[in-house]
Length: 228
Image (cartoon, rainbow, N blue to C red; front, side, top):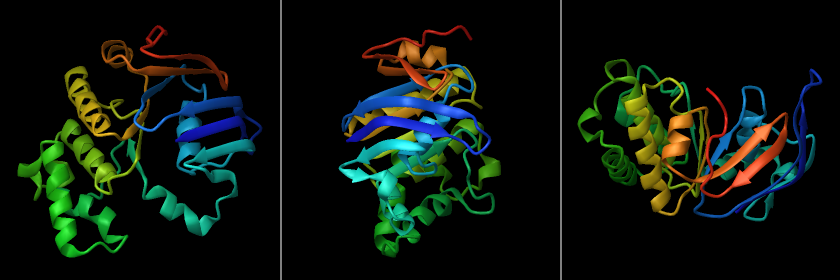
């Protein structure tokens, strides 16, 4: 599903974020990406949805070489990849329903399909009763659930979460993780960059640990492995 071959990423300021990364992630896996701050986790996930390009090496998603992907093709790639951010990135003046529907409107889905799909994903994240609310009327956990709903409304094959519980309290973080587990159980690949030792150690999944731009560990049913 996702394959990285000898991937390096050096930024314009001379900082090398990744050095010789080789990884294979199969369809339907749930993977935590962990490591110290500045280790290269965010770069790793950004490369997968082509927010960044590798300096060298190759990245494939379902046999599509992202290094050779033309700019005009990137939106089509991202239809199969949902992204959830730490800071939610909701449109503040739109309702919950409108925030999620927007992701379908840009690909010109029919109004009927939009309504059915939005209500379906609101049910998945437990927010059907908040469809008419605006983001400021929601708690942090509820806003993140809206962000997750928006990420999955296209039925993507891959969901990438970059520190999705970083701004949330421990109890809310566990609820959010259960939502990701439910999505994964439906066959969606989930890749989560996280600093949450509690989540990684409680919900055992594959752990890829990045340190100084290289993969230090890659373990099934792994643990966080760092002091926090």
